[in-house]
Length: 124
Image (cartoon, rainbow, N blue to C red; front, side, top):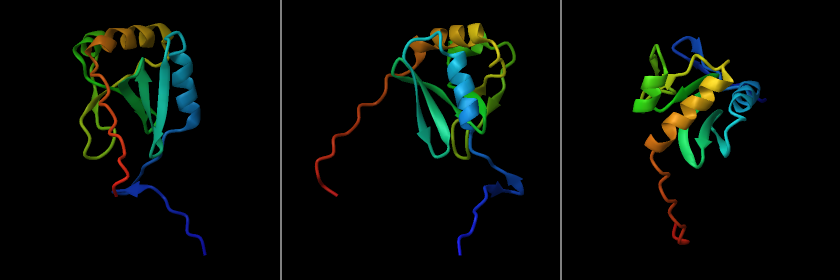
C-alpha cells in the first residue's frame, strides 16, 4: 500500500514552489543575461551571473539582504525561506520586470562569489 505524504507543519500545510511561479519569475528576469536556477528540495535557488541572489520558496521570491536591495525595496519585509535559515527579503513587486531587472543589477557587486566545489577524491 502506498501512502500519500503531505507537508503539514504545526497544522499549516507547507507547499513546495510551483513550476508555474518559477516560469513567471524567470520571464520577469528575462532581460538579464545569465540567469539560472537550481531545484533544491521542492524550491528553487536563483543565480545571476554565477552568484546566488536568492530563491523561490513557497511561491515567494526571497533575496539576500544586501545594502543595495534594502535601498531598492521601499517597504522591507524579512521572511524565513525555511526553518533554521537566515532571514531574507521578500520581493513583493514581482509584476514589474523593470524593477526586478534593476534590483538584480544593483545587488550583483555585493553578492559573494560562489564557494569553490571540493573535488571528490574517491574516499568515502
